[in-house]
Length: 223
Figure: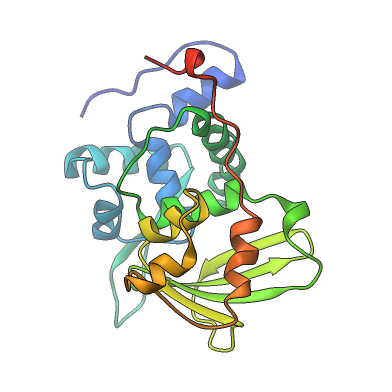
């Protein structure tokens, strides 16, 4: 196993990069931000990371106390990885990086479920949430999420919400096109890429409460 590279610099930012600056490390943190995952689940979320590299990053992050490994009780009896409380504190760091980099984000026809859900939390504008709290059962690629929106807050977590105001089922790329790309909701419903039951105005509330930052001027875009 290759030795971890250190900057040997007393700066806090340098030490942060010592801990989470290796390739794939922050993306492992991103994949665990919504809850524990098995190694196989991490492989699905990070398909371009080789198993050996992913294993190495997990060991390094565990040594750094950013995450921990624990075994689930029977009948599951499988090992999962989860962020420590200190590791959870990296969410605003990821959000700041995400907002900063989104100003030059290239177009893509693919986005993973956790990436999209975390992007909603990142791009949420509190003063656009509305006064009353509305709820949504959001199912992205068969993964259910509970959504509560209103009074300056957007809460999204894994799980079922049977009595939600609206239930929405689609892929993350479909909903990303509506939320960030301006695609009309009706278009997605008409072609069958999105289905919903309940109060569709709640979907419009979510779309209106999430906003990408202004893109960099063309002359400032990376080459």
